[in-house]
Length: 301
Image (cartoon, rainbow, N blue to C red; front, side, top):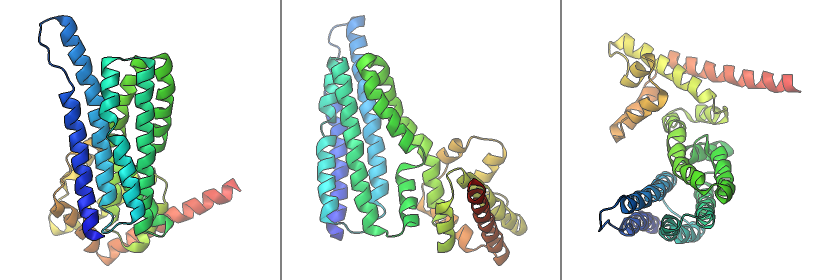
């Protein structure tokens, strides 16, 4: 099954690449100069970009999910085939919406997006349940795939289908904004979970149980501990920390983060090479967070 998993992953990448290519071929060139023709082509290109960004975001989530497993099951295979079958319909509904932008075509496009998202959730669930057994581990992987803002974005996508019935043009803007917002709003949460993998197993569990807002505080304390060690050895602060101290947005820090595997190894080494004092400080921070959650639950009761 290991070889089949690799081949299926490559096949999925190829299908998504073909989907994007087919949509480009559907854009008719302007053969006679006129503002009406150029505006029509511009509208078609704009609608193509909506589907391009959506398919790209699905590819990103798909790649993140498949990176968590080395093998697969027939359940994953079935979910994958159905997911790709519906996803391959996107060029058809994109072309329909570009050629005839009505409430019917806009709503059909939105329904297709919603079905694809539902099928991918089934695929992701099968992948996660194959590799992981505890709730904390599953939560970490779901965090990587979807981030923090996915649920309310899915709710808004359903609202957009209803809006498409009354205001089709307004729904088009949301269909474009949805995958962009999903990618950027969730990107920092995903990266934080990748960084958290370098923690000891018990601290990974503690981190997974924290509310989403606490990830920011954890990142700060982790950077502070590393800066203390860097200052003591004369290495200085990391570029990411320097940008944070200058007040740069967190998403800007993420955009400048290297995808080189050596960077990921450096992040992991940061925690693995921590001094006993630093490990104790991190453990004390997690203990404080647990006490805080316990006190809040006690007050609510």
